Length: 199
Image (cartoon, rainbow, N blue to C red; front, side, top):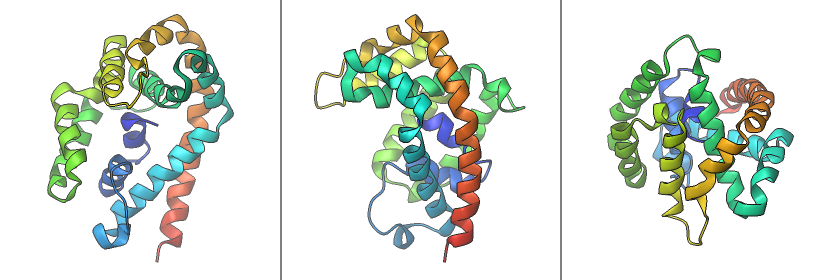
């Protein structure tokens, strides 16, 4: 999943949110680097990604993209699912998407000094351009995918992937709506399990 989903699936626990955000930016012995709840967030991030990658609805969504985008279809579906979460945010949270985004940015900023430099660099752009809210528009998705495409080693064609979202939006939305409740339940249970087993 992408940033907005990881933020939402931190369940308003600030340090878990921090870990959930930096999960792709850290390596090595986590307990030597971060306090318990941040480590739990990193662990949860990785569990969320594994669950997502193996879910049948996600795989069905990726099949639509694979003929054109190949292995990059996994990254694209993550971005597309943030589009639906942001666009239909009122179905999942009583706060406005902007209010939630502001809370996320403020939380991350409080911990900035202890976070990986590569993540902090990206986070400054995220906050400045308000990615979490802009994910809910096709233009925001286009910008996000174009930015990622510039960092890929091969020609990913991701800068055109928003056109697939526009063409197949109802189908992708259906896959998201079948998948996301499963992910919410999994994430809540997994976080409880990680806390119980942490020593």
